[in-house]
Structures are given as structure tokens and as C-alpha cells.
Length: 166
Image 1: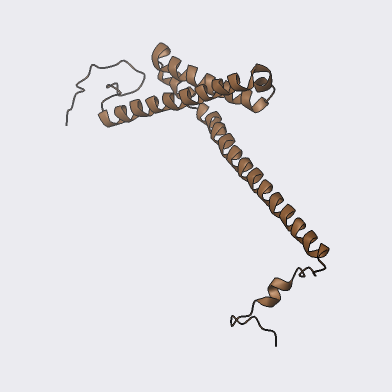
Image 2 (image 1 turned 90 degrees about the horizontal axis):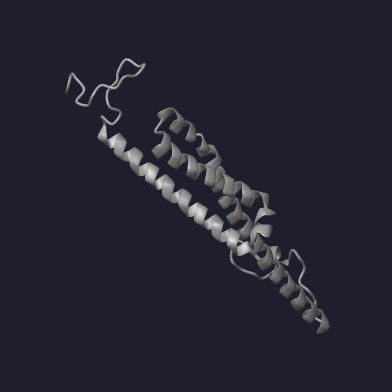
């Protein structure tokens, strides 16, 4: 316990004016999380620029959500770096934290993309199964065989495992 701050006293409007980095663990966590934020935003930025180059400017900018993603990620990255290194103002840095809400949008879009892709794959799979069933039904009818009824599966399943009808 120290009754006096080891760091120089900082003039503030608050009662205490000790060094904000008095608790080293908090400072370390803040630094690590800031670095992680910059890495994640940089990966998103690179992803969007690769998408821009791949699709071409005309197609990329014709999709509103791509443009929104690019805007949110770019503004977030610029503000994080500006508030951290250029302005060094804690109040403004906290305002940059409000961008978290917009960043969540990015994750929602990724989740939505996964759901849509999964649904499209399942729809294609279902369509192939239905086409195969139609082909098999056509073959059965062409050979004079009767199609099983829709509810015949329910009748064949007995509780005792016996499939014979009484």
C-alpha cells in the first residue's frame, strides 16, 4: 500500500489524479484488446479490398451492404488509430467505442451469409432428390408398377418390429 501516488500527479477535475496505468493488468488487457481490434479490423479491410478487386468497382459498389461494410470497417480502423495515437484523448477514444454497435453489424452479416449459403445448398440438394424421385416414379409407371401411397411408410412400422399385417 502506498499512501502517495508513485507516478507524478496529473491535474484533472476529479479528486484523484494518479496515473491511469496504476493497475498494470488493466493496462496490459487494454493494450492487448486494442491490438486485437486493429488486427481484426485490418483483416476485414483486406477482405473487403480483395472482394472489391475480385468483383470490380462497378459490381462491388452496386451492393449496398458491401459499401456499408467497407464504410464501417474503414471508419472504425481510422478512428481507432487516430484516437489512440494522434489525439490521445480518452473521451474521444471512448466515443470510438460506440462503433462497436456498428461492428456487430459486420458479424451479423457474416452469420446471415452462412445461413443463406446453407439454405441454398440444402435447396439444391432437395431439388436433386426431388428430380431423382420423379425420375424413379416415371420409370415405375413406364414399367406398369404401382407407386407406393404417401402414407404407406406409416403402415409398415409396427411397435413390435413386425412388418406383417394382420
